[in-house]
Length: 155
View 1 (tube, rainbow, N blue to C red):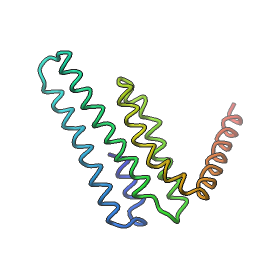
View 2 (cartoon, rainbow, N blue to C red):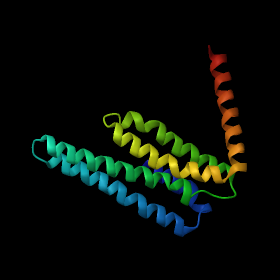
View 3 (cartoon, helix red, strand yellow):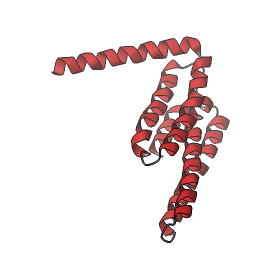
View 4 (tube, rainbow, N blue to C red):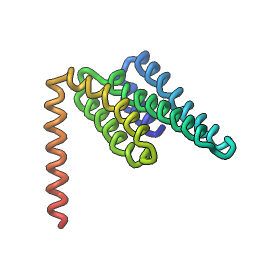
């Protein structure tokens, strides 16, 4: 939720309102479905094997839809002419993707559904923006070099 708010506050001034509303309209139901599943899980009687499988399958689908909703930020909110905002969106999505395995470690299927749904849309957009990809990658490489140099100095 915080990440979605951060994206909206940063990107809204540069993005057409229809795209922002579409992305928000896709994200909110995914978040509500996840909350509803949590609520149902907490209220259900002691679990049987069949009910656990059913809840787990629902969880995988809902988490995957959430990943797709966040991944579509890289498509719907991606500014065509601002490399700084492009890099911001890519880093936000990459950061969420990096945190997903630890958050969803209990379910490998849910982790993969979330990661694939999140990373695939923005990857396609980046491949279509070839000239900007070189800029983003070289900036990322320079940033990593600066971080490595700072870490070497601190030793």
